Image (cartoon, helix red, strand yellow):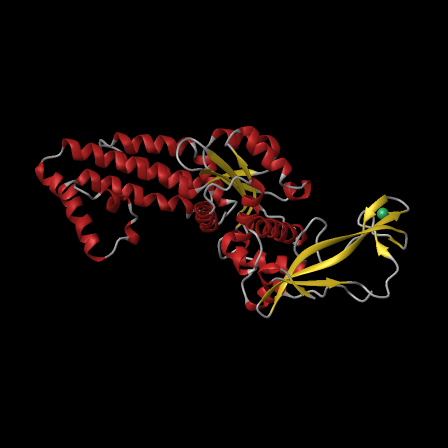
Length: 400
Ligand SMILES: [Zn+2]
């Protein structure tokens, strides 16, 4: 034992009574050692000291692989920190910036980042592969401008599965073929997505057996856009009374009635009292919720027809256009009757993705970003027990 610069404790370790070493290539054991080389691994701290282990790693002559390094149990093949320290850094990085975790564990930023990547990759590699019935394809905007990610997710369990740049058909096809196994693809009954044509084309080619279910959130976004058009139109041709009540009400008007409370409801009611047409458009938008309450496709179609009838004589061209749009996409809306995709899960996955992207702003490494998204949406640590499992301290060597 020896104290290096900056109070780091250097501990030399040696395995005693061992004459055979494991080949890092094939796992066979051999006693033929060609050379040894001192290498170091950062390890868990002791008292106030950060610890570095020094071990003379063998280069062995393997019968099948030739000259190879000895496999060591306490660290991954190229790792510069021990497995048990990697676990601590990896878990910490999920709740604090990499730079903080690096300071906490006395390693450089680069080492901490590599440890985190290895930690997440190992977690992802060793967990069970799920076979969701419903998957989601969605676009996420990257920063400002027309730059997008396409995200593939398991919307049954609410987990991100894959991530690619762009939102082209080729991107979606690559995600569906490369990020899912054949078995997983065969298990898919429905794909939840928006009305973006390249995605629809990719799903049609790669997953011919799966049905498209349009994301309720996206459909209602179109409805809100139509309502907003009505508002703008009414506002401009309105007299002073309407302007008085309508000013600054845009966000209030676009909110769903059930989320509007108390005095805000009164404000909306006052606005509707001076403009019937806006009121009518608002009610029509609110009614669209019922598109997802029917058990059969004819039920959905009937409802939409009734909705159209209510629109007659109202002179609301924006809402009529919305109706045409809904009719054109009725199949993907009514598909919900047969495949009850959990829209709440779809939305919460999207919220989590946006939160991770905000924190990881400027992250260049796509692989790392995907791993982080997988971790954040899968919530692998839900209890103290889960945490203990991740942080369980492995011995340097087993006694085999
Ligand atoms: Zn070998």
